[in-house]
Image 1 (cartoon, rainbow, N blue to C red):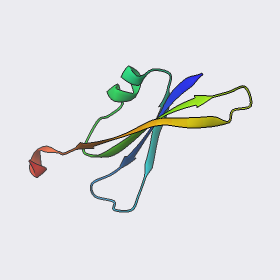
Image 2 (image 1 turned 90 degrees about the horizontal axis):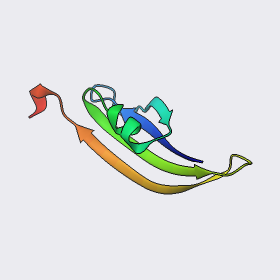
Image 3 (image 1 turned 90 degrees about the vertical axis):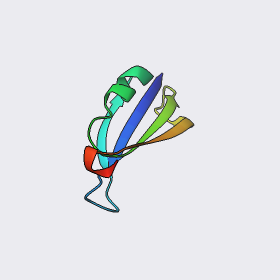
Length: 68
């Protein structure tokens, strides 16, 4: 099973990570990127024992209108 885990570092809370969710498709993970912040999307594959390997990690920085 492949899953995508999304976390967010908010602009106004340094050194903080918010858990956004776990998704079964990359498209759903991409759609969860809402609002300003730095998002980390980790693609993982789990086996029957729920142990997994990290496949790829993407970091997406989304600025709000005041930061452009």
